[in-house]
Length: 551
Image (cartoon, rainbow, N blue to C red; front, top):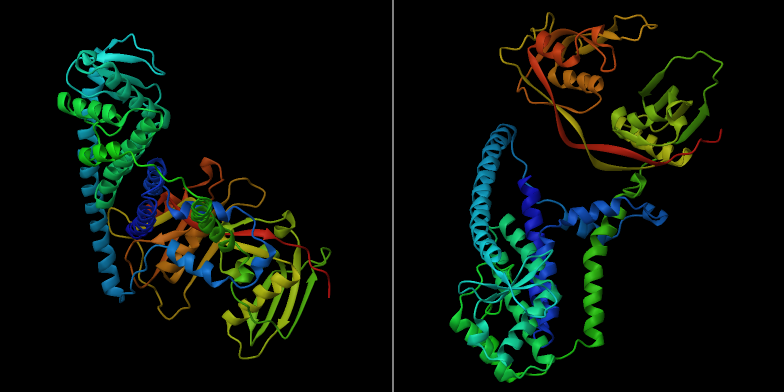
């Protein structure tokens, strides 16, 4: 989790740094453009690139993706992934994992304290503003949003996001002449039209979540500067005299205090000296020329299209990943449904023989997945059966033969698949309250195995089984349990070695009186604990499959 957060932070930091460089390049152009760029940089902290990549995986990959992925896709894929960690020796890795657990908890606690402190501080300030708003009285001033007079010395400001109102200090008409008051109202009208309170509130959320990132606090200052500068430029563009407008701002600063929240758009924000100088000089703002417009649009499209495109290519068929070796000769034939033939799958001396197997069973063996990891595909995938005979070099390893089988399935069945991570149920096997009930093997020379026996007649709905482990490891036990609970089981017991054991259980879909559930059985008969949790599960999605023609 920490690696993923760190990856998101440095990606967002680079994005924000590029945005800041863009604002510097556009320093002679309208401030509203620079403000918009900085707002986008702020929002990027709320949207990881992995979200855009995930959207891309939903788009069916083009057929041309079956070719090798290009270098730029591989490069961007590396950027989008969490930072890598160095491999550690086994004892040190276990100790490191234990320490990382405490480190994660400590960092979460520290983050929570910082988030709470900032949220409480801003909540207290908002309560002050809310109290002032509640005590304000309506003002007879024509304005696009309601105007109220508030007691106290807080500066004029727009309060609220959904239904904003303009708060003016009581008696401001006696302290500013009509021309100056009109200039202040024109400034606040710009805040209303630009919805500056909304963008400021979004950045406050980003600051609260990532309070530890110094760039975001600097970015908050820049956002206020460009926001106020954008309003100044608009007021002057509408015909306000620079001297009167500057005097109105100076009088407000002299008579009233600044708004306590960035999401309450006032008048006195930003560096006052620079603002007054810019107002008095009233230099013409350069319009963005066509070349810069095209460049900005291209950058905006690339920021979204690049990770989405990466997602499209990462979902390309598995056959596109790398060319696999092929069999010297292979035969694929449908099984005659009239013949009663048992199931068989053997790899010996580079020769593969598969009898009466469905395509789903072949996929499970070829791609190293379990049945609960396979999604999609036509209905015959699990019903129709086939006989396969294939030969390769006698010295070919099992992994090489399975790679050839993948190529065979892709060529003869037109199989296209891709792997992805989905939210699902994962299970953890841990120690129970007492000592475990696994027994030392009666004969440690026996071949390790787990055997399953059906206790219930086939014609009854409730199915009960007994599984017996002989000289079996915890890895074999978790594999057996994963087939029972239809999900991955992770061994968290820390138990090593081989054991004998026995447990009785009823299937998950059996009636309540069929026997103990697998969870109860593991706890009572093995002294272990099997718990379900939400997590990410790797799945294999069948994009396309066709029935093969006989050869």
